[in-house]
Image 1 (cartoon, rainbow, N blue to C red):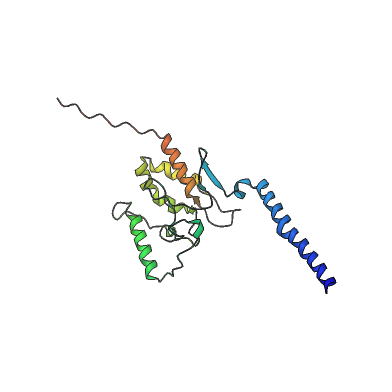
Image 2 (cartoon, one colour):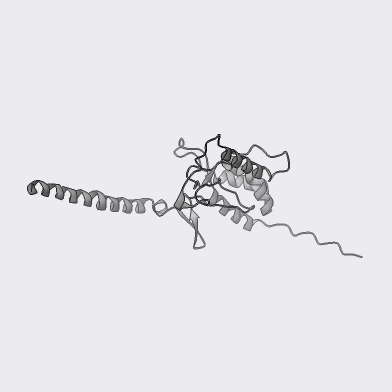
Length: 205
């Protein structure tokens, strides 16, 4: 019995060291060497301060920023509670949520002038952490962001087009734009844009 058990234990030890220690360490080291940005969480820093990750969405609610997809992850964009709404298209709660979100999005346009609201602006992603929008969803928000930032809409539309990522390998996924990177670029554009000084008030005579 013992003579049969010893080889099995030795094999277990060897395989544990190979597959449980050596292989993970080798892959971690290789990933860190070949893909350091991705291996360390695709973290984005600004002036030495960590502000987020390129692969994890975060909530932007101020009118001067592009807003991401709605999130059902915890209180919203909680990476510890990645989750979708799990509501069917016939769910009364889902219908009310979509209707309320669409109404809020149209409110940024003069009455009767709003184009159709892109679907991802009114529905949550499956993970609740989607960092991307479609170009159409970004363009939909351009008038509001331009108005709040004092920028030309043409400037922002060009920025959206420049930052739009193509399909991976030319065939996987859809064109998309990273919301965090877009908003950082909006901040930079706003800093560089010189706004005209208001005309002086006429002097009473």
